[in-house]
Amino acid sequence: MKHEVLIEDSGERYACDEDETVLAGMARLGRKGIPLGCRGGGCGVCKVRVTGGVYRQSRPMSRQHVSAVEQAHGTVLACCILAQGDLSLKVVGKLHKALCRSRAVTSGDGPRPAG
Image (cartoon, rainbow, N blue to C red; front, side):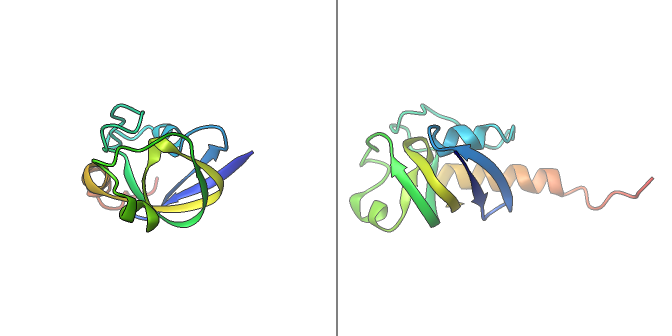
């Protein structure tokens, strides 16, 4: 079953299967600004804060990157969670810098004339 994931920072939405990580779904957006790192919960570059929806943790997260307190408040590594329903999230840390930087570059051209 697919669920919709909303990246609040950019307004982008993508479909994510229940059996794939939120990061794997995000990677399919094809954006240069999405750092993929180790994809195993150890590097911390895919840190996000889930602001709405239900997810399941698929593997342990490094406490070096996500403390128990942060996790209790919705901060997780996107490579370690599986969407169990529609999700809303905000990007944090290195992922935020990369996503917002690439978004500014792609959207900085202004509107294009029709025709």
